[in-house]
Length: 294
Ligand SMILES: C[S@@+](CC[C@H](N)C(=O)[O-])C[C@H]1O[C@@H](n2cnc3c(N)ncnc32)[C@H](O)[C@@H]1O
Image (tube, helix red, strand yellow):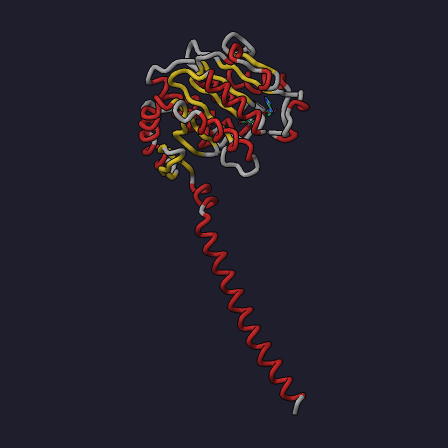
């Protein structure tokens, strides 16, 4: 597999930290790896991103475009009353600030014919704006279930035959609307789309017809993932195999078993202690009663 180009690696490993946002380095690398694999396999198309915040992921996606590919993004920007669940918190940005952030890294005047902006709620989007040929489609706007559901349905309609959709926060317990909506659509369309990769708070979905190809891509990531010190696992979801790639901090965070055992041990220590205390209290009570009754 072709390695990620050096200018893109430099953005991920050095410059990305200067742009506010939630994109993790591991997630950025996974997205870049998948995009490079697509390009190598001759998969061409456009890129769409819902929920850009300050442009942390947008810059990466724009760098990943090849010659005639376009990127189109959607965010409510300063119109935060449209941000019904306050996704992104209070530090969201204006469209002009977003443009300035992105332009600094892309060195092109934005917007242009290869970089288009829909400054509005994703609720206003339809297929004529999103178009049908997206090879990468990121969804990280509102996290409310009805809006995520609409975004996901639109992304499926706008996905090219061999493209993939990237959801954020599917396993984030603070945003349950995401997993509710994504699972609902996945179950309903289980013959059409399916997840193939989970990692670094991203959840990757492709058309069922492309599952084998995406599994081969994730399989070929193993060596590099291990070199990065990441853990590579396999699991099953909705009856289909899915790869899980995460780093050591995720492994210890999600290692509930160890935490649960410790918790159990503590409970046992407390129970034994309380039991002994009860026995001692009973003996003391009987001793005192003996004294009183002579
Ligand atoms: C969590 S942030 C996105 C983070 C970004 N993907 C990153 O990697 O840094 C969510 C963004 O979605 C935007 N947003 C919230 N509701 C939206 C909606 N209905 N349509 C479009 N954008 C929305 C917010 O303004 C905010 O910028």
